[in-house]
Image 1: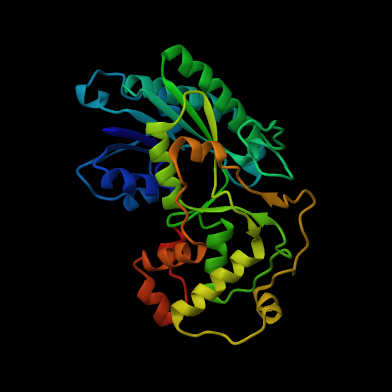
Image 2: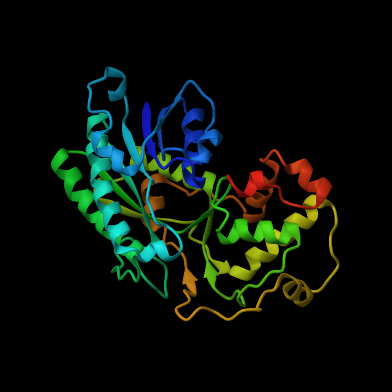
Length: 336
Protein backbone atom coordinates (compact mmCIF):
# COMPACT_ATOMS: atom_id res chain seq x y z
CA UNK A 1 0.00 0.00 0.00
CA UNK A 2 1.49 3.32 -1.07
CA UNK A 3 -1.16 5.78 0.12
CA UNK A 4 -4.16 5.90 2.47
CA UNK A 5 -6.92 8.45 2.94
CA UNK A 6 -8.30 8.60 6.49
CA UNK A 7 -11.45 10.56 7.32
CA UNK A 8 -12.05 11.32 10.99
CA UNK A 9 -8.41 10.52 11.79
CA UNK A 10 -8.04 12.07 15.25
CA UNK A 11 -9.73 9.38 17.34
CA UNK A 12 -8.05 6.40 18.96
CA UNK A 13 -8.07 4.15 15.88
CA UNK A 14 -7.39 6.91 13.36
CA UNK A 15 -4.33 8.20 15.20
CA UNK A 16 -2.96 4.70 15.68
CA UNK A 17 -3.54 3.99 11.99
CA UNK A 18 -1.62 7.13 10.98
CA UNK A 19 1.29 5.97 13.16
CA UNK A 20 1.11 2.52 11.54
CA UNK A 21 1.14 4.05 8.04
CA UNK A 22 4.19 6.16 8.88
CA UNK A 23 6.03 3.07 10.13
CA UNK A 24 5.16 1.30 6.88
CA UNK A 25 6.24 4.29 4.76
CA UNK A 26 2.66 4.77 3.53
CA UNK A 27 1.49 8.26 2.53
CA UNK A 28 -1.51 9.59 4.44
CA UNK A 29 -4.15 12.15 3.54
CA UNK A 30 -5.86 12.97 6.84
CA UNK A 31 -9.25 14.67 6.39
CA UNK A 32 -10.08 16.41 9.67
CA UNK A 33 -13.14 18.28 10.87
CA UNK A 34 -12.67 22.03 10.40
CA UNK A 35 -11.40 23.74 13.52
CA UNK A 36 -10.80 20.49 15.40
CA UNK A 37 -8.56 21.03 18.43
CA UNK A 38 -7.23 17.51 17.92
CA UNK A 39 -5.44 18.32 14.66
CA UNK A 40 -2.38 19.33 16.67
CA UNK A 41 -2.02 15.70 17.81
CA UNK A 42 -1.46 14.36 14.30
CA UNK A 43 2.20 13.31 13.93
CA UNK A 44 4.39 15.68 11.95
CA UNK A 45 5.77 13.75 9.01
CA UNK A 46 6.53 14.40 5.34
CA UNK A 47 4.30 11.39 4.67
CA UNK A 48 1.23 13.05 6.22
CA UNK A 49 -0.91 15.73 4.60
CA UNK A 50 -3.74 17.27 6.62
CA UNK A 51 -6.86 18.72 5.01
CA UNK A 52 -9.63 20.39 7.03
CA UNK A 53 -13.12 19.63 5.74
CA UNK A 54 -16.49 18.91 7.29
CA UNK A 55 -18.56 15.95 6.16
CA UNK A 56 -20.80 18.29 4.19
CA UNK A 57 -17.73 19.43 2.22
CA UNK A 58 -16.83 15.99 0.88
CA UNK A 59 -19.08 16.33 -2.16
CA UNK A 60 -16.99 19.25 -3.47
CA UNK A 61 -13.58 18.18 -2.21
CA UNK A 62 -10.77 17.57 -4.73
CA UNK A 63 -12.89 18.09 -7.83
CA UNK A 64 -10.00 19.77 -9.62
CA UNK A 65 -7.65 17.28 -11.24
CA UNK A 66 -4.35 16.98 -9.43
CA UNK A 67 -1.86 14.21 -10.18
CA UNK A 68 -0.67 14.14 -6.56
CA UNK A 69 -4.21 13.44 -5.41
CA UNK A 70 -4.41 10.17 -7.34
CA UNK A 71 -1.70 8.29 -5.48
CA UNK A 72 -3.87 6.63 -2.85
CA UNK A 73 -4.96 3.02 -2.62
CA UNK A 74 -7.45 2.86 0.24
CA UNK A 75 -10.02 5.15 1.84
CA UNK A 76 -10.69 4.58 5.57
CA UNK A 77 -13.97 6.22 6.55
CA UNK A 78 -14.14 6.90 10.31
CA UNK A 79 -15.80 10.34 10.21
CA UNK A 80 -19.31 10.36 11.68
CA UNK A 81 -21.52 12.88 13.48
CA UNK A 82 -23.56 12.10 16.59
CA UNK A 83 -21.70 9.15 18.11
CA UNK A 84 -22.65 9.66 21.76
CA UNK A 85 -25.59 10.55 23.97
CA UNK A 86 -28.92 11.77 22.65
CA UNK A 87 -27.38 12.50 19.24
CA UNK A 88 -27.46 8.77 18.56
CA UNK A 89 -31.22 9.04 18.18
CA UNK A 90 -31.24 12.29 16.20
CA UNK A 91 -32.68 10.71 13.08
CA UNK A 92 -32.05 13.72 10.84
CA UNK A 93 -28.40 13.80 11.90
CA UNK A 94 -27.96 10.06 11.48
CA UNK A 95 -29.68 10.05 8.08
CA UNK A 96 -27.21 12.73 7.02
CA UNK A 97 -24.34 10.42 7.97
CA UNK A 98 -25.62 7.85 5.49
CA UNK A 99 -25.53 10.42 2.67
CA UNK A 100 -22.08 11.59 3.77
CA UNK A 101 -20.83 8.00 3.53
CA UNK A 102 -21.95 7.94 -0.10
CA UNK A 103 -20.10 11.23 -0.59
CA UNK A 104 -17.01 9.58 0.94
CA UNK A 105 -17.22 6.79 -1.66
CA UNK A 106 -17.39 9.40 -4.44
CA UNK A 107 -14.37 11.13 -2.90
CA UNK A 108 -12.50 7.84 -2.71
CA UNK A 109 -13.10 7.39 -6.45
CA UNK A 110 -11.80 10.90 -7.23
CA UNK A 111 -8.66 10.18 -5.22
CA UNK A 112 -7.99 6.99 -7.17
CA UNK A 113 -8.67 4.56 -4.30
CA UNK A 114 -9.37 0.95 -5.24
CA UNK A 115 -10.54 0.03 -1.71
CA UNK A 116 -13.10 1.59 0.64
CA UNK A 117 -13.08 0.48 4.28
CA UNK A 118 -15.98 1.73 6.39
CA UNK A 119 -16.14 1.93 10.17
CA UNK A 120 -19.39 0.38 11.30
CA UNK A 121 -20.37 -0.51 14.85
CA UNK A 122 -21.54 -3.30 17.10
CA UNK A 123 -24.63 -1.08 17.55
CA UNK A 124 -25.78 -2.44 14.19
CA UNK A 125 -26.66 -5.73 15.91
CA UNK A 126 -28.70 -4.54 18.88
CA UNK A 127 -28.57 -6.74 21.99
CA UNK A 128 -27.12 -10.21 21.43
CA UNK A 129 -26.43 -12.99 23.94
CA UNK A 130 -23.64 -14.73 22.07
CA UNK A 131 -20.57 -13.68 20.12
CA UNK A 132 -21.05 -11.25 17.25
CA UNK A 133 -20.45 -12.79 13.84
CA UNK A 134 -20.49 -11.07 10.44
CA UNK A 135 -23.56 -13.04 9.30
CA UNK A 136 -25.58 -12.54 12.48
CA UNK A 137 -28.97 -10.86 11.81
CA UNK A 138 -28.84 -7.16 12.66
CA UNK A 139 -31.58 -5.53 14.72
CA UNK A 140 -30.24 -2.10 15.75
CA UNK A 141 -32.09 -0.37 18.57
CA UNK A 142 -31.07 3.25 17.97
CA UNK A 143 -30.65 5.66 15.09
CA UNK A 144 -26.87 5.42 15.23
CA UNK A 145 -26.90 1.65 14.73
CA UNK A 146 -29.57 1.89 12.04
CA UNK A 147 -27.58 4.52 10.14
CA UNK A 148 -24.36 2.53 10.36
CA UNK A 149 -26.15 -0.56 9.03
CA UNK A 150 -27.68 1.41 6.14
CA UNK A 151 -24.40 3.15 5.35
CA UNK A 152 -22.62 -0.18 5.14
CA UNK A 153 -25.19 -1.74 2.84
CA UNK A 154 -25.60 1.27 0.59
CA UNK A 155 -21.89 2.01 0.25
CA UNK A 156 -21.31 -1.62 -0.73
CA UNK A 157 -23.74 -1.24 -3.64
CA UNK A 158 -22.22 2.08 -4.74
CA UNK A 159 -18.69 0.66 -4.53
CA UNK A 160 -19.70 -2.35 -6.64
CA UNK A 161 -20.93 -0.05 -9.40
CA UNK A 162 -17.66 1.88 -9.28
CA UNK A 163 -15.47 -1.26 -9.19
CA UNK A 164 -14.12 -0.26 -5.78
CA UNK A 165 -13.41 -3.05 -3.31
CA UNK A 166 -15.71 -2.63 -0.31
CA UNK A 167 -14.96 -3.76 3.23
CA UNK A 168 -17.23 -3.00 6.19
CA UNK A 169 -16.14 -3.35 9.80
CA UNK A 170 -18.25 -3.56 12.92
CA UNK A 171 -16.13 -2.20 15.73
CA UNK A 172 -16.65 -3.20 19.35
CA UNK A 173 -14.92 -1.42 22.25
CA UNK A 174 -11.53 0.05 21.36
CA UNK A 175 -9.42 1.96 23.89
CA UNK A 176 -6.10 3.74 23.75
CA UNK A 177 -4.41 7.13 23.40
CA UNK A 178 -6.68 9.84 21.94
CA UNK A 179 -9.83 8.00 22.95
CA UNK A 180 -12.72 10.28 23.88
CA UNK A 181 -12.82 11.45 27.50
CA UNK A 182 -16.36 10.09 27.87
CA UNK A 183 -15.44 6.46 27.21
CA UNK A 184 -15.55 4.04 30.13
CA UNK A 185 -11.80 3.51 30.12
CA UNK A 186 -10.75 7.16 29.93
CA UNK A 187 -13.48 8.22 32.36
CA UNK A 188 -12.27 5.62 34.84
CA UNK A 189 -8.65 6.72 34.41
CA UNK A 190 -9.65 10.32 35.09
CA UNK A 191 -11.88 9.63 38.08
CA UNK A 192 -9.65 7.07 39.76
CA UNK A 193 -6.55 9.15 39.10
CA UNK A 194 -8.03 12.37 40.47
CA UNK A 195 -9.84 10.80 43.40
CA UNK A 196 -13.30 11.79 42.16
CA UNK A 197 -16.34 10.07 43.61
CA UNK A 198 -17.19 7.09 41.42
CA UNK A 199 -20.33 5.11 40.76
CA UNK A 200 -20.36 2.05 38.53
CA UNK A 201 -22.86 -0.74 37.96
CA UNK A 202 -22.04 -4.15 39.52
CA UNK A 203 -19.78 -4.63 36.48
CA UNK A 204 -20.92 -8.14 35.65
CA UNK A 205 -21.17 -7.33 31.95
CA UNK A 206 -18.88 -9.51 29.85
CA UNK A 207 -16.93 -7.14 27.61
CA UNK A 208 -14.43 -7.30 24.76
CA UNK A 209 -11.77 -4.55 24.71
CA UNK A 210 -9.21 -4.08 21.93
CA UNK A 211 -6.20 -1.77 22.15
CA UNK A 212 -6.17 0.95 19.48
CA UNK A 213 -2.76 0.02 18.06
CA UNK A 214 -3.92 -3.57 17.66
CA UNK A 215 -7.03 -2.26 15.88
CA UNK A 216 -4.83 -0.17 13.58
CA UNK A 217 -2.82 -3.23 12.60
CA UNK A 218 -6.05 -5.02 11.75
CA UNK A 219 -7.29 -2.14 9.59
CA UNK A 220 -3.95 -1.90 7.80
CA UNK A 221 -3.97 -5.65 7.11
CA UNK A 222 -7.56 -5.54 5.82
CA UNK A 223 -6.52 -3.09 3.12
CA UNK A 224 -4.22 -5.80 1.78
CA UNK A 225 -6.05 -9.01 2.59
CA UNK A 226 -9.72 -8.18 3.15
CA UNK A 227 -12.35 -9.70 0.85
CA UNK A 228 -14.54 -7.50 -1.33
CA UNK A 229 -18.07 -7.26 0.09
CA UNK A 230 -17.11 -8.80 3.43
CA UNK A 231 -18.08 -7.67 6.93
CA UNK A 232 -15.58 -8.08 9.77
CA UNK A 233 -16.15 -7.86 13.52
CA UNK A 234 -13.32 -5.86 15.07
CA UNK A 235 -12.51 -6.95 18.62
CA UNK A 236 -10.10 -9.08 20.59
CA UNK A 237 -12.40 -12.10 20.56
CA UNK A 238 -12.04 -12.35 24.35
CA UNK A 239 -14.48 -11.11 26.98
CA UNK A 240 -14.32 -10.73 30.75
CA UNK A 241 -16.25 -8.92 33.46
CA UNK A 242 -16.29 -5.16 33.12
CA UNK A 243 -15.41 -4.68 36.78
CA UNK A 244 -12.13 -6.54 36.20
CA UNK A 245 -11.11 -3.85 33.69
CA UNK A 246 -11.95 -1.12 36.22
CA UNK A 247 -9.85 -2.84 38.88
CA UNK A 248 -6.99 -3.26 36.39
CA UNK A 249 -7.05 0.50 35.72
CA UNK A 250 -6.94 1.15 39.46
CA UNK A 251 -4.07 -1.29 39.96
CA UNK A 252 -2.02 0.25 37.14
CA UNK A 253 -2.54 3.76 38.50
CA UNK A 254 -1.44 2.60 41.95
CA UNK A 255 1.73 1.07 40.50
CA UNK A 256 2.32 4.13 38.35
CA UNK A 257 2.39 6.49 41.31
CA UNK A 258 4.26 4.02 43.50
CA UNK A 259 1.60 3.72 46.20
CA UNK A 260 -0.05 0.31 46.32
CA UNK A 261 -3.12 0.17 48.56
CA UNK A 262 -3.37 -2.93 50.74
CA UNK A 263 -7.00 -4.04 50.68
CA UNK A 264 -9.26 -6.96 49.89
CA UNK A 265 -11.08 -7.30 46.57
CA UNK A 266 -14.33 -6.36 48.29
CA UNK A 267 -12.75 -3.26 49.81
CA UNK A 268 -11.30 -2.26 46.43
CA UNK A 269 -14.70 -2.62 44.73
CA UNK A 270 -16.37 -0.55 47.46
CA UNK A 271 -13.72 2.19 47.14
CA UNK A 272 -14.16 2.29 43.37
CA UNK A 273 -17.93 2.53 43.61
CA UNK A 274 -18.53 -0.77 41.82
CA UNK A 275 -22.16 -1.76 42.35
CA UNK A 276 -23.20 1.70 43.51
CA UNK A 277 -25.71 2.12 40.67
CA UNK A 278 -28.03 -0.45 39.04
CA UNK A 279 -27.80 -1.73 35.50
CA UNK A 280 -29.62 0.28 32.85
CA UNK A 281 -33.05 -0.92 31.79
CA UNK A 282 -31.76 -2.30 28.49
CA UNK A 283 -28.23 -3.04 29.64
CA UNK A 284 -26.10 -5.03 27.20
CA UNK A 285 -24.64 -7.84 29.32
CA UNK A 286 -22.44 -9.57 26.75
CA UNK A 287 -20.30 -8.05 24.03
CA UNK A 288 -17.66 -10.09 22.27
CA UNK A 289 -16.49 -10.43 18.68
CA UNK A 290 -16.21 -13.71 16.83
CA UNK A 291 -12.93 -13.14 15.02
CA UNK A 292 -12.85 -16.44 13.11
CA UNK A 293 -13.30 -14.85 9.67
CA UNK A 294 -10.95 -12.01 10.50
CA UNK A 295 -8.16 -14.35 11.57
CA UNK A 296 -8.74 -16.58 8.54
CA UNK A 297 -8.21 -13.54 6.29
CA UNK A 298 -5.36 -11.66 7.99
CA UNK A 299 -3.80 -14.18 10.37
CA UNK A 300 -3.50 -14.01 14.15
CA UNK A 301 -4.98 -10.89 15.71
CA UNK A 302 -2.50 -8.80 17.73
CA UNK A 303 -3.51 -8.68 21.38
CA UNK A 304 -2.03 -6.19 23.82
CA UNK A 305 -2.70 -7.04 27.45
CA UNK A 306 -5.22 -4.55 28.89
CA UNK A 307 -2.92 -3.44 31.72
CA UNK A 308 -0.08 -2.93 29.24
CA UNK A 309 -2.44 -0.77 27.19
CA UNK A 310 -3.25 1.41 30.21
CA UNK A 311 0.45 1.73 31.00
CA UNK A 312 1.03 2.81 27.40
CA UNK A 313 -1.67 5.48 27.66
CA UNK A 314 0.01 6.92 30.75
CA UNK A 315 3.63 6.63 29.63
CA UNK A 316 2.91 7.85 26.12
CA UNK A 317 1.63 11.19 27.37
CA UNK A 318 3.65 14.25 28.20
CA UNK A 319 2.11 14.34 31.63
CA UNK A 320 3.40 10.98 32.87
CA UNK A 321 5.86 12.64 35.23
CA UNK A 322 3.20 15.11 36.30
CA UNK A 323 0.89 12.25 37.24
CA UNK A 324 3.57 10.54 39.30
CA UNK A 325 4.38 13.80 41.06
CA UNK A 326 0.85 15.03 41.65
CA UNK A 327 -1.25 11.84 41.73
CA UNK A 328 -3.54 13.28 39.13
CA UNK A 329 -4.19 12.68 35.48
CA UNK A 330 -3.45 15.79 33.46
CA UNK A 331 -5.72 17.08 30.74
CA UNK A 332 -3.44 16.09 27.87
CA UNK A 333 -4.38 12.42 28.37
CA UNK A 334 -8.09 12.96 28.66
CA UNK A 335 -8.81 15.74 26.20
CA UNK A 336 -6.90 14.47 23.19
